[in-house]
Amino acid sequence: MTEFSDDERERLYELTSIGASHASMAFTLLLHRAIAPNVPQFVDLEEYSADESWEIGVIFQADGELTGLVTILLPVHSCEIVAERLVHDEESEQYSDVLESALRELGNIVASHTMSAIADRLGGRILLSVPVLVMEGADTAFASMLRERGVEHGVECELTDAAREIHVRLIFAPEPKS
Image 1 (cartoon, rainbow, N blue to C red):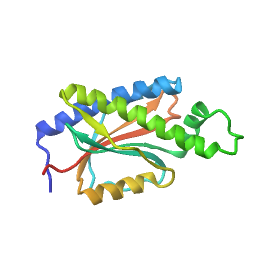
Image 2 (cartoon, rainbow, N blue to C red):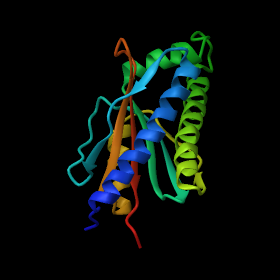
Image 3 (tube, helix red, strand yellow):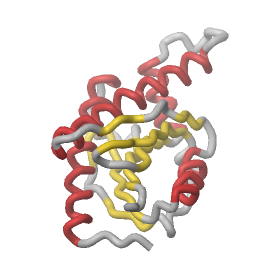
Image 4 (spheres, rainbow, N blue to C red):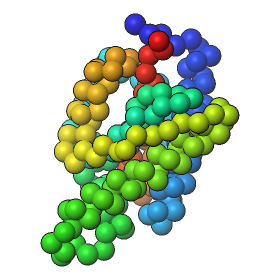
């Protein structure tokens, strides 16, 4: 079992706060709606249970100065609001393809802003994988990926708008040290 020292926990909180702040700015710019981060929470991923309300997600592998999973989760209702702002032609036959492409790109932009800010703080580089888009059961898929990698702890931060209509869960789950 990998345990984090108090200093390591503090460092993860700090880095997640920095990343979440940049993620909220990216969401704000893309959605033309103010999105703000809440206080990050350290989570024991062994006790992390899938929550079916977090249906849609974009999951990345981060490698470099920090290695682990970076995940952006959205409930269906929030995804519908995001879709209204990003995809304007709901009548199109290709709507679902366009929506999936828009969500991948949104995830790319937000995750890039997040991890770039963290890499800058660390004075190194962090590369992100091609995003994995999960349109159903994203929280369950994420929990499964954590177990496969032996990840035990992570830091999550919820991002919301003032009306609390848009909810985003940003999670960084560092891989165990070798």
